[in-house]
Amino acid sequence: MREPDKLMTAREAVKKFVRDGCSLTLANFATSEPFALVHEVIRQGKRDLYLIKSSGFMASDQLLAAGCLRRILTSWHLRMSPTSYYSPIDKLLKEKKVEIEDYTNWTVAARLLAGAWGLPFFPVRGNSLLVSDIARIRSFEGENKLKVVENPFRPEEKVVLVPPLNPDVALIHAQRADVNGNVQLWGPLGDTVYAALASKVIIASVEEIVEEENIRRSPFLTLIPEFRVNAIVHEEWGAHPMECLGYYDMDEPFLLIWYALLTRKMMESFMDEWIFGVENRREYIEHYVERFGIEKLNSLRAKKYLSDTVNLGSTFEGDMKRWGIDWSFFDQSISEMVEWEVEG
Image (tube, rainbow, N blue to C red):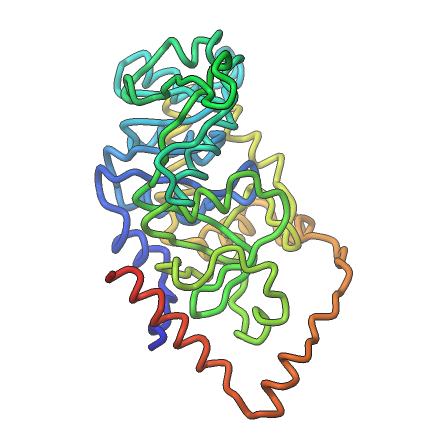
C-alpha cells in the first residue's frame, strides 16, 4: 500500500531525521542550495555533523560558523581573501575544531555514484591523483581514502579505487514534487542525483507541490522517486540566495553581504538576523521584503523560457484506458516488490 503523505515542515523533517553526529550531504551541486533546510539544522543546534559536499559554498560556511560540523569531505570550499572576509573554515581548521578530507570533484562524485549504485568501490584513472597531495595527505579516512591496484586488463597501468559514500541524510532543494515524494528537478545537476540516492534518508524541499498527474506528464524529470524520499517540505524561495531554475535567479548582492563580513561579531550579527531571528523560510522572506522591498524580491523572479514539448502518447497507455485498468494497480505492485526486496 502507498505510504501516507510525506509532507512536513522543515522543522519537523530536521527534528525527525537529522541527529547529532550523523553524516549529512547537501546534494545540490553549485546551484539551488537547500538553504531553508540548512538554516533549520542551524536553528535546532545540531552538532558534530560530518558534511559530505563536492563543492562548499555559503551554506557550508554557515554550518561551520554555527559550530554544527566536526568533519568535512569535499573537493573545494569557497574562500575569499583573508583580508576581506572572516573565513570560518580557516579559523576552525587552524584551531583543530574541524577535520577535512580533500578529494577531487570527480572522486567525490565517484564515491557517491558507488554509494548510489551499491558498488563496493569505484575505479578512477589515477595518474593525476597519484602525483598530487590528495593521495599523499590523508586525514580521517586514513588508508581507506583510496587504494591503488593494477589494471587486470593492462597490468602496466595503475588504477585508483575509491570507496562508496552513503550519507545518513541528504538535504536537497528541487523545483517540484507530489505529496507521494516524486521529486522533479532540472538544470545543472553535477552529482546531485547520486548524492541524494546514495543517502539513507532524503529530505527534499521544493518550490511547488503538484498533482500526481503533472508528475506523470513529465516522467523524465522525476530524478528522485517516491520510494526513496522520506520527507517533502513545501518551501518557496527555499534556495535563496542561490537560484532555482525556472523560479528565481541568484541574489548576488545578498551573497556578497556574507562574503564582506570582516569579523566573527559581524558574522554572528548576520546569522542572528537571517537565521536565528526568523522561525522559518516564510518569515525569512517577509524580513527580506521589509529590508529590501518587494520590488527587489520580484526582480529576482525568473523570466519565462519554456522547453519544447514531446509526445508521450503510446498504444500501451491508450489500451490501459480502454481496458479500464487503474494505474494504482502498478503502483501498488511496484511498492510491494520494493518492500519484498528490502525484507529479502
